[in-house]
Length: 319
Image (cartoon, rainbow, N blue to C red; front, side, top):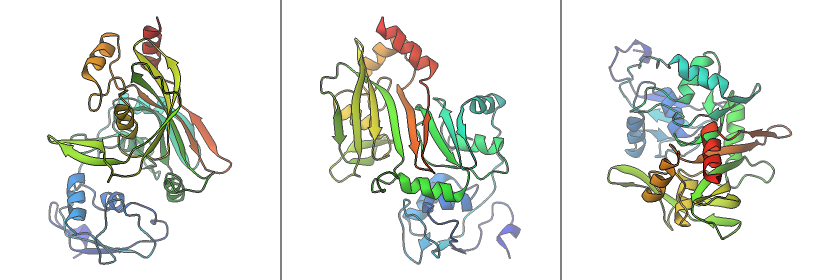
């Protein structure tokens, strides 16, 4: 019996998929999420950890990138289709107005703070689901991610070739001139006296008190952030941060380990400093992806202006 004939909520049979050239370059976890629509993200990762998913008869980590000709064994799972998320019209209108750049290959948004980039167990939709609703017949995939509270440049690919090219450009070992460059603005606690500073501290994901965290660990993944002071305010310093690697919470953890956590950071920040900033009018994490360079063609450079709330807050503390 074909998988499509299975009754709703019934496990599918084992499926063997051979990866085609236009599918290569995808991470195995993202490939499975596409193949197993309706299956919770947490369950997909459990299938990988337990070895029930095999690539060329072997186990692979979620970060493994598929190659043309790979054979992927997908075990029987319940694949009841979820209803398409109903994204509110207000969110769709916000995202329409957030478009910074678009051509046949990419779409760049000035991501609003407070919107997750994708749905999950607690969220019925994220930006990618909303954009697919706006572009129902268009291939769309996230090139990279931003934290829910972070605003600024977010890139979506409109075809598989561009997605693979930009994923290659995100790797730290990408050829010079072919690297994707990401620059942020962040407001850090206190007075910064060190001048331009590079933080090269390996980072490791962990779980603490039931919460996912990232910490500096010598056995963690290589991570490099370059901090450059822009303007000193009485309680805090505005910094430009360029990252060579794109680890989860990288800027937030690197800032915290210098003793200058980001304003409004409830996970890695300073509670007293956050309270002071909130009393002055800051109601979110002060981290904004202000600029991105994409190595496509002769190069595409996109700037996202600082959001109105953050700009107004800087005016407040400048007084």
